[in-house]
Amino acid sequence: MAIDPKAIRIGTMIRGHEPDPVGYLEKILPHGFESIEPYFWQTVNKDLPELAKRLKDVIGDRDVTMSTLGMFGNPLEEQPKDIETLRGWEALIDNAHHFGATCVAGFTGRIRNRPLPESLPQFKKVWTELSKRAADKGVKIAFENCSMRGNWETGDWNIAHNPDAWEMMFNEVPEDNLGLEWEPCHQMVYLIDPIPQIRKWAHKFFHVHGKDATIRWDVIKSQGYGGKEKAVWMRTPGFGDTNWFDVISELRLAGWSGSIDIEGWHDPVYREELEMVGQVHALNYLKAARGGDFIAYPGPLKGA
Image (tube, rainbow, N blue to C red; front, top):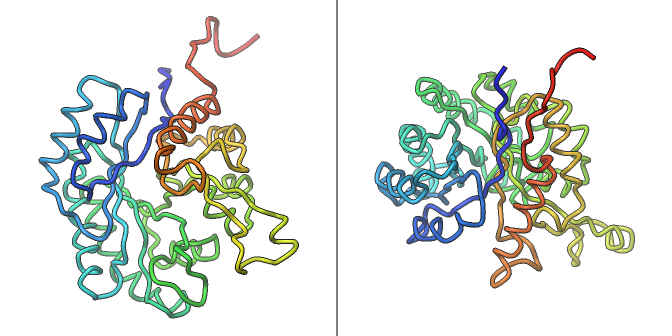
């Protein structure tokens, strides 16, 4: 049986909505990223087939994939930007093949400032239609597990915060092509241990974000959670509390394959002038956590 040495790829995200994502990609590719997730915030402001062509031209003959595209916003309500977000999901689903992508990821949306279960009827309406649209094109949909500072009672952007919400979502729309864009960071924000979560939910992980967290237990013990002083920092992998060697081992044990794309721009230390210092450190750290370079076993794989 042929083994894919990059069954788990390590890559990064690029902001498709910014003026020159192609120029940005050209500058970062030499560092060794193996996959790219182009993403948009609330609106798709590019000619997608043209953008895909230009990104592919920059990639050239490098072994770099764009398996997942991102669309972030709230597609469940009807303010102008919400409608643009919904149209953006449709556009990315319809144009995923130009990028070679098989997955589109982002927030579920939610009914603003209402308890989370009240979003479920609109979630079912919107995502039943989008999941069918995606299935017809061989595309999966993955919901990022970010609270965006919301909680069970109120919020602006996303339902898919935690396992209770996932159970409700996937019961409401039980389609095989609906899953998660998972990362340990957003579970650690809730003080959830990500490792046992992988064992239960890996079959629904369609894409993984490389983002970590540092839990400041001294703050939690002295001032509690949700006070004036921040109790959890979002971190670039390699600088937070997560042991990614364990994460990737659990993903492999679960039979998972795909891309782990670094989500930068959140680390309180490795940001601005140090952004790429942090991202390239994360790239090399995650490659090491994957086991390093693939080396073919020289003997028979079964038996003694």
